[in-house]
Amino acid sequence: MALLTIKNLTVRFATSTGSFTAVDSIDVTVDKGEVLAIVGESGSGKSVSMLAVMGLLPDTATITADEMTFDGQDLKRLSPNQRRKIIGNEITMIFQEPIASLNPSFTVGYQVEEVLRFKMGMGRRAARARAIELFTAVGIPEPEQKLKVYPHQMSGGQSQRVMIAMAIATNPRLLIADEPTTALDVTIQKQILDLLMKLQEDYGMALIMITHDMGVVAETADRVSVQYKGKKMEEADVLSLFENPQSNYTRALLSALPENATGDRLPTVSDFFNPEAEEAKA
Amino acid sequence: MTIAAEGRNLIRDYEIPGSIFRGSSSVRAVKGISFSVERGKTLAIVGESGSGKSTLARIIALIDPATEGELLIEGKPVDIARQKPTRDMRSTVQMVFQNPYGSLNPRQKIGDVLTEPLALNTNVPAAERRKRAEEMLEKVGMPREVYNRYPHMFSGGQRQRIAIARALMLNPTLLVLDEPVSALDLSVQAQVLNLLADLQAEFDLAYVFISHDLSVVRYIADDVLVMHKGEAVEQGTRDEVFADPKHPYTRQLFAATPVTDVEAIRARVASRQAARASAQS
Image 1 (cartoon, rainbow over the protein chains, first blue to last red):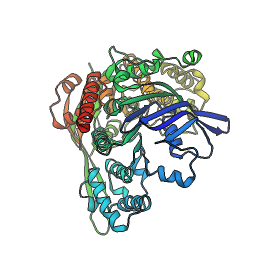
Image 2 (image 1 turned 180 degrees about the horizontal axis):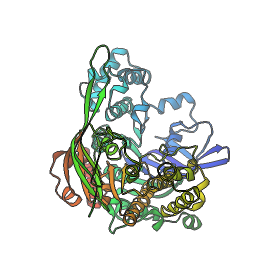
Image 3 (image 1 turned 45 degrees about the vertical axis):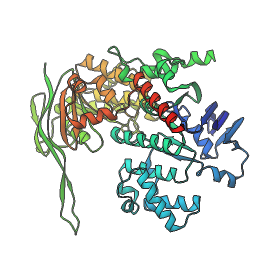
Image 4 (image 1 turned 135 degrees about the horizontal axis):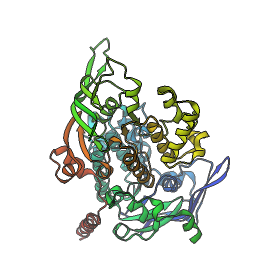
């Protein structure tokens, strides 16, 4: 059953040179416990569509959608109070730069406990105990000591684990991860992806993985949506997408991967995909 | 076969200044690395953050001196700590940086970016400088008209082409490329890698290619040097290293790199479905 349903979402930004359409009539659905990957290059609108769901876009953005429901509740018609009960509780999000996402002036323990106290209504002592549990769950060694540490004293991978701990603190049903491993080394990336997949299984959470990296898609997704310049190019289950891509753009992306290189030259996207021709066809 | 650059047991220490509580100490970022790269070939230096790969790149590019060890450029020993390198020496080694948004001066027109190395290092007259810059722009796949434009008018991939063009203006024999494609989108990455391959063939360039991305390294490298905590844990030809990695760290690196192989995806999807079925029953 669909947990999050978005139909015909369009996001426009008012700019000094007129209106710019970042997301153009996109449909997104995620089922309970499913991992959906949204793939695209920069400017594809992959982050913007999810920021629209979270209500994190600036005032210059105009968001229109035919439908935007989470577990049967219409996200468009909720009062700010009702909305806050869903966003940050039922739906949480982590970002690309873990160190920038944390407040440098407070200990990481304080920041995790803050979520527990304000979102879950826990007392100080209960929050402290739960924070230790969460740190253990995301694989931070010596959790009691690490609660007293400031973000700059942690490595990138550790900070991302803290972010994940904050994101799962409310037992969300949907976690949106926006390029969660792009700033990390490959060995750390592997650990973080493994952790996200484990938590997703254990908690039965749905996960939306926003990424530009086909490798990350291959290792995590159940279903994949490919976006280009704000439009959806293709949506398929992960195996079909890699085995038998339908859209020219997906084909181009896959063949531009260096590991798929056959001859001396790498095929480039323009060898397969001509944006003008595609637009004329549409 | 000429050797463009050679390092013998290069070491680099960084001083950490002390405070009133503590004396100064030093960190050894590069712990005795030897390598050589021939003209027309690519040596890839692979490592994660903190491995010392960028420190080594800066030593090879004559930006920072080595604390110990010997660096030879075209067979001649260079020690920039003792003697400032000559203009000719500077011209032989050029560098391209990771972030093309940071490496181009936003107030400088593209033409000035390209002609500045010539103005500083050679006696080429202005008209000739302009001509060479325009020719170089065409070589990297940019139209001549961009000569009078500013960096903000270009995308990441175009800027990286400009940065490469700038590096080539002095006819170097060795290019040190520090993560040149890791800030670029996949489709643009392929174009820039192709461009680098073309330029290498045309000018018989030696590349020292710093990267953390094994799939890119596998595509572009002739020789591979894997760095971990300042040491070269594995060194060999590309085929040797990729076919049979010896060091546990290299194996760990390979294991962590995501694969897009269809059979691997099929196996993962199947094991996930099996886990779900057993969870339900």
